[in-house]
Length: 512
Image (cartoon, rainbow, N blue to C red; front, side, top):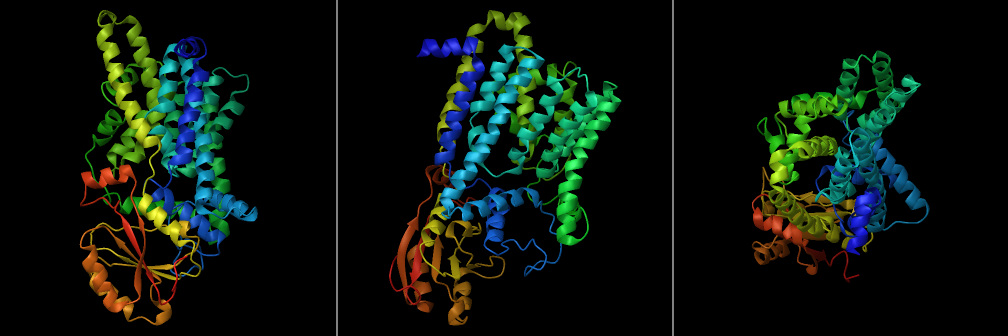
């Protein structure tokens, strides 16, 4: 078996790379349930499924209760999920976990474009040696399979950026340059629709083309970039708001006004992110290779650097924001490092040190890959809401939480859209919430109370029973292994805690 693997690695590395990529993505498709961050579930899955059910979870649509106009959210990507979920409902696939299995499978399949074309681009620009490094890293870098399953627009836009670059690299001296650059621009345009900030990358590509004095190509690329945006964003917004580009305008204003909100970090933060994600010392090898290759491959270097600078200048920095350029950093880093290695006397004399560096990288990477690829994130909340889906007409749920870390519960897994009473942490504590809700009319009282976390659980239940005497313990949603570890590392701010379901017997006398 080892001999056969080595033979494939030497003679047909792309086959081995793709098989490996498929294997670990299938693992994530099957086991990596839940979601990673708020955006990849509540801004995509909750909204689109609620539209299918005749509800508007986020109040994004005109006429919905609570909506006062455009909210600055992209309707295109959730709209695709709306069509998918409508089709699944039509063929009677209604279980939420089954739907998400299909969603993960489709995203995992899309991510294979990044692996395959990442290899092909590297091979076309340089050699099979550098392509093997880039390909295997794109296939099984520890976070790539898991992140590829998530509904993060920062990840979803990557295959379209890769496709745009491939069209240009594949046709370096095309007989019909306008057509080639137009098609490449269309792919960049799709990436732009999904993640508007990817337009900075596309602008870098146009600059690189202009430096080469390919004026027609830059014009064609710009036309291709803008055309999908005009059709989708202009068309969707005109249909919803009777004026084009209403959402993107609101999105820009929101980001300008909130640039100091959320996570404000120093300008060098993304250097640390890349060095950490790619695991030193290999991350340093790739960084050196990336810098070294700048002259030869401006078509990739300028877009990545421009994207990097633009995001580093904005105070609001989140690690996921830099994800769209990670594959291109790996491609250029692999090219530059391989070229340097072939002529470096130091590394030729210190092969053991080089092998030890890569061995350290692969040990750490594979250990992380095994855990992360099968990580069921936010398991407690997903299992809690999926458990409740067996009950009809829930209508009202109350979350009893004493912490300062709010927990959003995904109604998608419940299969219905109950009103959830949550503690208004800035103004009241859980006790006052229970008292306030208990004074509401019977129809507005909770069918279930969800107690989050173990702290003072017994006392919290006793207090709740003073106002809801029919409460009975039903089920515990347990966090997954990684969720428990994350909570142990950061108990003050992490929200991955057990959830205890108590049923209100007044509404549901028997357990289902």
